[in-house]
Image (cartoon, rainbow over all chains, first blue to last red; front, side, top):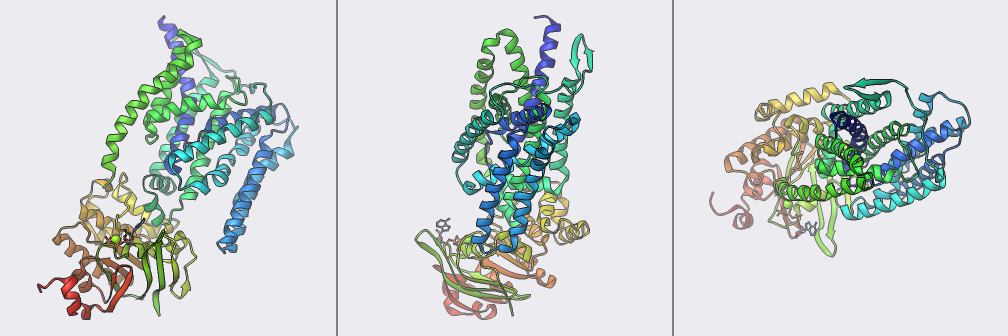
Length: 347
Length: 238
Ligand SMILES: Nc1ncnc2c1ncn2[C@@H]1O[C@H](COP(=O)(O)OP(=O)(O)OP(=O)(O)O)[C@@H](O)[C@H]1O
Ligand SMILES: [Mg+2]
């Protein structure tokens, strides 16, 4: 392997890794706040790409129906809960958050379907439509079992993933899509061609990691999410609602996943079931970070991307085998370090 | 009128009843203590009052029935619990812990800032350690942080679950001194303690709880000299 090829593979790996970084940060964020390993996270990324493609080819994306159905279901559950608890005064608020807000992007997409829209508008519409899905799934699926074990939550999460893949096939069909490139800029770095798309992907990973850091470090909302993650009871006693913290975590995570879906779809063909592998590789990164550390997660996700790129060059048939083969020793190492750090946590 | 009225409160874990028909009042501006041995149901009582545990009976706060309200609503009304386990945010700084204590008043930055200054005035040790992680504080400092964090929410009723637990005698004196000094801020206090003597010396009124029920009650002054209590809870030495 020449230095030139190594440089090329590294750029390629960092690009893919940056996508994993965005999704992996979302995994950690959601797990920390809700204890849910949100397996369908890769599907959220894929659905964003597929929704964007549908908008660009002037079809009505099936995700509109999904959002509408989930919003209706979540609203129903919430109204029943409030009625049972004899708190009818809170119903208007529930209608606003569970019905009106999610239906706004759905209605916008529905109304503009078939129109020729500028690229940035389609991107914003696709993102806005995807954002409510995970928080609504949280309300409908996870909140009723919020006190369950991590294993129960994970099992349900896996089931949810399969349900979403099935819906994906129904909504988008079996064909893969590629969305319009966002720029045709190209620059040579150390003899390696780097596209504008690649630069955008790397920039997005850096910017959103930075924003996430600032959010946790400097905003009271960010700190309240962190507090919920480290001590749920303590957070509740301060008046922080864990459900609300969870919703914010799902929204932020979905934004990260959605952006990665939009950035990847001009360079990789996305199928209805592409989310799983993307999500799984990002998850390896999150596991390297122990599902708690954001910086280690980002490094881990980049590592997975680079590993994948070199593995594909050495032997493309065994690319996935090599990547996931690495997961096993990493998991063993992490579970070993966990067993030791947990003893310190209990006072 | 009493600020908090607990009427016939019951708490069960499965079939076992931990609290059986407890009624007690906390008058505005008073320090009321509930003393009793391990397993008497004191923690269960406070946890239920906070709405973190399902309970039977009625709770009234400032005359309003709060029995059906969720925890967050009770906190917004002015109830506050400093739990037995403190529940600090261990990997966050002292400053951040206090900031989160003011979560319900977060939209008023001036209020948070002045409350923070007041807490640092009251607990100079916390001021020195504002950037230190809560998990690395000593036991006494942790209890001070738990108290300071609670005060950041401007509670009207502060419920303290064994604030002296696990602390050295000298620090216990300091903590009880601070609790007495909170009286001047107008906050009412429901103090749960095993350290009966210190609690009764600090409080205005006392209840004695045993196996889920209130046995005696009366002005703290009287309970300290009650021969039945001296034998069981207060020890012979005076
Ligand atoms: N989560 C629980 N599940 C089952 N039983 C419980 C639970 N929590 C408390 N109990 C039981 O309820 C009874 C009262 O416990 P509680 O913690 O309220 O007592 P306490 O007066 O606070 O005791 P201590 O002074 O030791 O803190 C005890 O018998 C205890 O074993
Ligand atoms: Mg107790």
